[in-house]
Length: 365
Ligand code: NAD
Image (tube, rainbow, N blue to C red):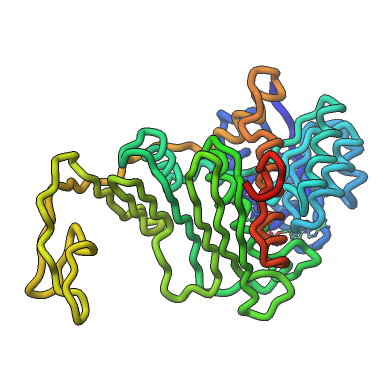
């Protein structure tokens, strides 16, 4: 079936979804209209052929509208989602789904009771960089992974709009945090038993300009997240290790490598000059320190695997869900879980304690 979409918020993401949907014949949806509080956005929307509604009530009263796609600043996602669901419309909503797990639970329960779709645009599950990490994790290319560092590093601060205002749900926890943590929770099939977090307020805004968080899963896997808008020297976006290998993926250019043991018994390493002393314990596998250079066997260096992803699956899936042909690819429970873990990061920062959000007794193991 073909479904009509109306956008609430015709800014960057509203326009992005309009293009994706209306320029792809394989998506059985059409964006037909929009509502925005900014008259300039209305001018653009009209020029692009959309019906422009005076207010959200008019949009929701339009019987032609099947799906409301909420693309406004974060604080209005919950009220608009509730209003749209009460009006009998299906809802797609930008991330962060809502400002809290409680809001998302309430909206998700209403959607379920009403037999309506509510799905969050967690598009970065399709990022090709993350797809490489997931493949290496799943395929055990470096053996059993034990630890991951997931970073998103910028140095331009937070853009000077609603994104740097707490009242609008600004800050990096709700911005990149809901992507970075979401996809690792999806990758590691184990409860999160320890959470420790620290937010950064280096720019003096009333919301965080970055955060660091350390998660321990029940199966022993550990993940470190480092989101920063003041990182003038960016560090690798992903770094993963096991007992027998490691992976580095530098940035969106997809540059990186895997180094792993070949499994052959290692000869005793040669000591190298390290600072003012010698070390063989810490002698690198691949090194070039002037007169000391080489490649300590037995290791192999692999290129990163290439994984094809198609973020359009989000829209295809939404149509399939409405046709009754598929389950939502982004499950609301997974979104609620991610918001809960991020709430634990904030609480850990506020209390200085390690939290145990998914430990059976919520206390120390
Ligand atoms: P934006 O500032 O470019 O656009 C927001 C639009 O909403 C503006 O046109 C503004 O006038 C309008 N607006 C503000 N308050 C409104 C209200 N109460 N009612 C109706 N319209 C209102 O922001 P954006 O970059 O498009 O971000 C919108 C949402 O998309 C945010 O939740 C953001 O987190 C999310 N986002 C997601 C991704 C992603 O990759 N998934 C990327 C960027 C932004």
